[in-house]
Structure formats: structure tokens, C-alpha cells
Image 1 (spheres, rainbow, N blue to C red):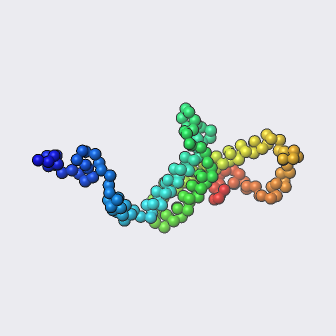
Image 2 (image 1 turned 90 degrees about the vertical axis):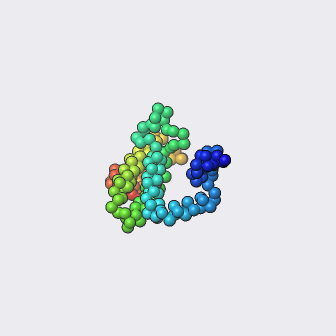
Image 3 (image 1 turned 60 degrees about the vertical axis):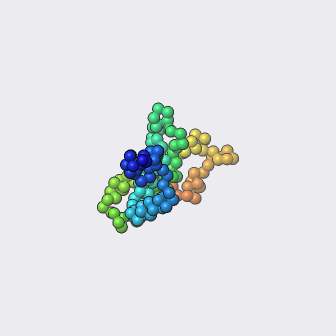
Length: 174
């Protein structure tokens, strides 16, 4: 008498010793095909937007000088405002496409994007002020030791307008 009959039928994927067996390549392919037939492009875009928002928030790092826990930032975590900006731009692009399909359900996603944009603007403004403060503490001297002519420097690149400099206006690509 075999132990299989005494124990009853085994569930699919189980071995006689109770360990789960690895699915075959055909089983994996069939599961993948079933998932592809179930999922929609809208589902993928929504998941991508949520992932980008989470990544953007994570890349902001500790906000306003706060530390993550008693030991500071966790290993491998650091502020990367360029990636935050890219994440924001990516979500905005996805929202444009998602508007056609699920515009009513996008409220929470828009809110999260707005919060990320505001946090990014605050952190970018703080970083700019910190950089400007570091430049001012160097005495405003150029490489040759001469004073920089700020009016000539501003002539080549216009500065931000009043709304941008307040940190309250989101400008794509900046």
C-alpha cells in the first residue's frame, strides 16, 4: 500500500516529502499568459504611477533636516532631487493618459502628486538657498579672485519669477 493513498491526494505542486516543488517552465508560462490576459494597460500605468510616487517620496530623504530614526538615514538612502523631479514628471505624463480611462478614481493619485510636488519645491528651494549661502560665504569671488558681476551673470540666464522663487509653483523640467 502506498503512502500516497493513505495520505490522500496531494495538492498540485506538492511532493511526497511535503516540500513544494518548483513549477515547470510550461506552468510558469501558462501562469504568465493568464496574468497577461487578466491585467490591463490601465492597471500597469496606475501601478507605475504609485511606484513612482513612492520612489519620489523616498528619494526626497528626510524632509527639513529630520532624521530617519535614531541612526539617521538608512544605508543606501539619500536625497536625490533629480530623481524626484523625474518621478514627478513621469506621474504627470501617466496621469495625462489615465485621464481618458479612470478620471474619477484619480483623485487620491493627484493629491499624492501634489504633496510630492510641494515637498520637492520646498526641498529644492532649501537646497538652492543653501548653495547660495555657501557661495556667499566664499566672498562672492570668482576663480581669479575678482568680484563676480551678478548683473552680467543674470543677463545670460533669467532668474525665476516671483511665483517660482516662492517655491509654490511647479514648473515642469526644473
